[in-house]
Length: 436
Ligand code: 4AD
Ligand code: MG
Image 1 (cartoon, rainbow, N blue to C red):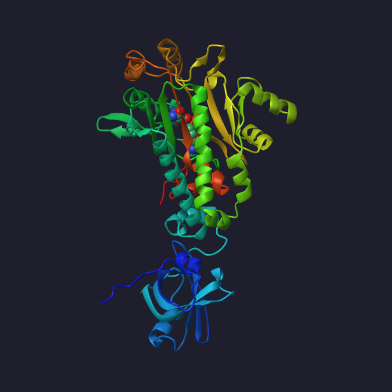
Image 2: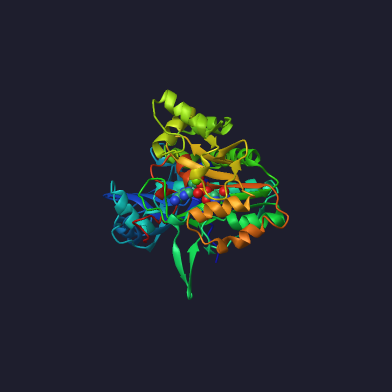
């Protein structure tokens, strides 16, 4: 018995070869029949192809199967490839053999259903062309992040997901029952990374991160993936430059590998290309307020965090990602150090994406001042004993160090141009959703 060679639809279409016999397998994307002919559009992970099934070209029982099979039935087809300008991709398969592997029930998803319905049917909706395109881009983004850091001599370093401390404020912690104790799901890899740099100096990680965000927004997930880096001997400006290079590298990798997916999503490829070649500006928080207050007639008081509206205005102003440094120290996490030259501000930065996607990176230099950190933690009502191990890192060969975290889904959402971050992850978890 000879082994069947299955051809990917994309390879059939790009090889542009007519009059050859091919074997295709996949799922019925659309189908319609009239009399003695069935037009079946078949999809696999790589694309869609029209299969033309004519009575007489294959056994009658198979023709009946073709007429009866509903969308999302899984099929194996053998046929001859012919050029046909009217078919999607310019070629069709004239079928001589059909095997329906599974006759699908009536598929619950039809056109124009609500976002909530599609989220309920997420296990089925991820096979849509839209979701497949986004998930392929996500795969490129994740691969690019690993490549970016490994090519630059960073080691991958893992932190526990169950952690006794907060990192980014107690209000968004997820508590977990831990035998007879309690612990929390990781809000960030950072505090453990600050231990890791004494061993490996330059490290990175990408993993699930948890925040109990108590509001519904198009930018927040309860479970998201953060890609973080931490490096010994680096200051704020060193890591800002790495962050800018990382985002440009990710964008270039997507432009190189996912042109078809960006087209399916109707994303403006030229706009992304221009951004990938631009310099991303760096401004201070105080300069950002000046831009907003002068040009947009806003009236933001120094000391307040930038809200969505303000971040969007800034992004509109620059049209590229923009880095904002030196936020007011009062509204920053306990580990962000005061700038000695201006102690009301912290040596920290955010990168804000264009087009309303908000903060895609948050990072900083790390405080080396135990006393200042203790004060700030106490103000937050934290148990100082829990941080003793962290303060040890300042006692045994402390060095200047810095790092940042990239919100993977925010980057994916921005590059894909989608309206909700929920579509940037296969199975989103939010305030109101933890199923399926
Ligand atoms: O700015 P954040 O809170 O920074 C940290 O957690 C630092 N400890 C990282 C570090 O320095 N190693 O989070 C980093 C990024 C944000 O800029 C944002 O892109 C993303 O993570 N992010 C979220 N993405 C989706 N849903 C949420 N609830 C998010 N919270 C933060
Ligand atoms: Mg932040």
